[in-house]
Length: 178
Image (cartoon, rainbow, N blue to C red; front, side, top):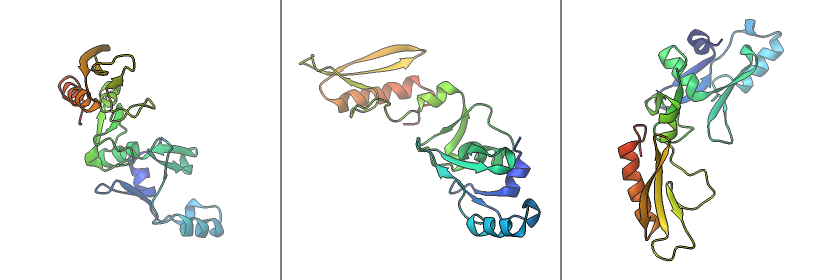
């Protein structure tokens, strides 16, 4: 398993920017000098990793079973010396912002409560629903509290519904940072 010491031998983490860069390696890590020089020209001192389709930064470390690691979990290991106990939440909602001040180790429910965008293909804000068959006050707001849906009311505009949703979210969801 990857340890903090080994991670620090391979990568440098900048806590102010949240980026990892590959550190230069000794030739002893490589089979031949040609492989070593190719690695150095391609990777040494360059930003490590890629952004996944879901917006998370990932870094592939071949020395440990050619495994990809989520950068935010590596940042936690790099700074605190241990793997996170649960989920790492990006406080500002930006999945590629891996500055240590933007990361917190939370349970699954708290992490889900910090959601900032809807998973639906709707153009409506988070927590707002539209009822086309309802001519008066067609927008509603609701959220889940203790695994139950809490209805917040009907509204004339999506903005009104979203404002009420955000206030309720701040009140009922401990993980909310909106």
